[in-house]
Image (tube, rainbow, N blue to C red; front, side, top):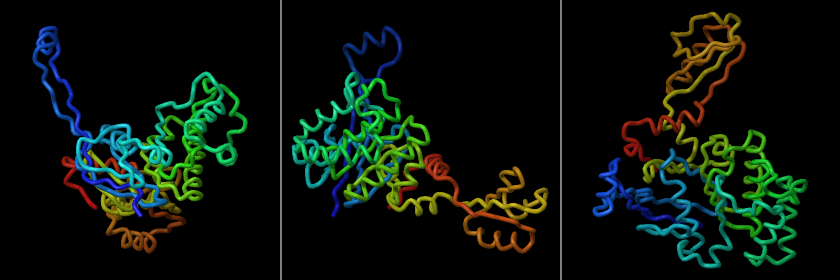
Length: 330
């Protein structure tokens, strides 16, 4: 069953435009020039129970605007969205009690009091029974390692500690749908890994649907089998991450170790690096098997690996196209 259903969703802003200078400023008081900005343009997709879906796109693609509409913070200009059967912009209690929106660049915790006091406030807001609250808090504290920091004022926490508390506070009511907008932004590698592991475990335990935006492709690769890619508010791709790589990455890389690393391998593919005895080639995807067979037959190979390019490179390739909207694939 689809817990998120989006049909031709649109969000259009009217933006005031004027030229620089005092004269233009005075003129704009009488005649305002307005431009139409389509932040989200006829977007359609659905997310099933228990899915973790990556929601990708460059800055300004419409990702955060889409999440805010799905969370009921913005009214759409057209189309329709349903989350758990509710219309988000109506902000009904039954809807709000089952969803959460976590934004890596926004705070929900009160800055000058301990995180545990903000959690108590959330308990009151969501009317969580005390027994349920204690059970959920114990679970979140264990999974995120919060015990040493719960009684510290939020202002004294590191960014990673604060982000863990932000996520815990957003999940005390055990939402069934999680909208996560850059939840690991600015965190170090260890903290990112801990947050990813927690999201995966929460999804496994509660079958929560997760819609995740992130510029850290490690988040997407670790959590999301399926990705939705948008650009200028339009849908470009909706499918398995592996299919995205297969479609938009026409090459693979072959890394080999040779007994003689000075060998000329240009006849086998494009040599892109040589370091510490390892030579890396870029070859057309369709030629990978043939080239690998030739290398093993012709060269004294001691070790080799064949890999897809990093997902960051694949995404960059998508948006480097002159007309990215022409790449739309469902």
